[in-house]
Image (cartoon, rainbow, N blue to C red; front, side, top):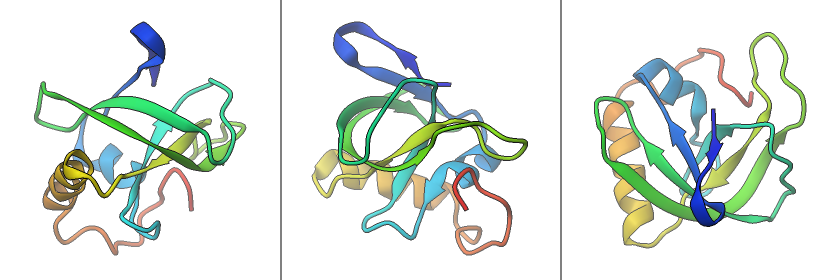
Length: 115
């Protein structure tokens, strides 16, 4: 779950590869990551999130645009929003690491938090 940090920075810890798969929006230009949260967001809002990916303690900071919103949680999809991964150096580092962790799984038919 995303937690508000200091100065409006959200943190999102993705514990395992299954959760990462459910959180990754590969169909968005340059990808996006879903942030489970009850915080109100609107499409196009700019947000700053520090992600922790599976098997890592390092927080990877990323600013991006909100490109997806789940307003209400249901059995398979938590409330929250997805942030588009930037094309800057930091964004590319995050995208490369996500895709490395999801190698061979990106086009799977498993349920995700968005579709």
